[in-house]
Length: 197
Image (cartoon, rainbow, N blue to C red; front, side, top):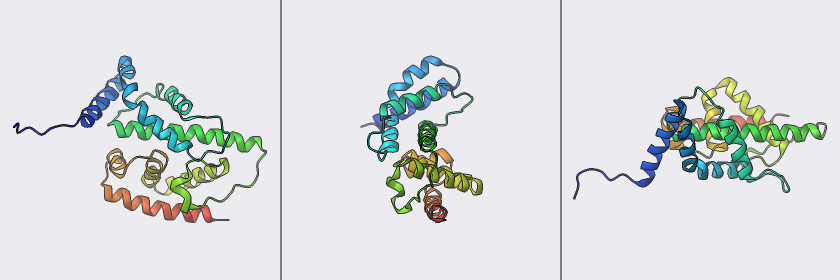
């Protein structure tokens, strides 16, 4: 029996993903080709989460959202990828902005209309259900970021990216307990902000 700890294949894959991210950041374009199969399934899960409550009949599918985000990701430069959770946090942010741009175009096409209130009790399942709700949430999140950028990042990673408490803590270099405190505060703050007339 060996005294060395056994590493799981998941840990090995995470380590390889991190190595490929760093090689890509250092300019190795071939690393990007090797990276894609490692991250595609998780990117599809993130995209599916963000699209889960889209209106019926919407045309953007998870695969198309991943591909659109991928096109933006390959143009990202000067990023020091810390680890795979950092990569997925950035990916989730890019997807959120793609959906937000689509929502703004839908609202503009309808020539305005008052923004609907978002029920924060439904926030964890909201995802992007209606264009006006997504825009209202984005505005509230921007207001939170102006007050406390870290708390806004916690919401972004947990809600939009579907990152776990531990993954969010790793990306932000804070404790899981701090993530939970920020998450609790942010939910209350966003609820109050979205409840304003």
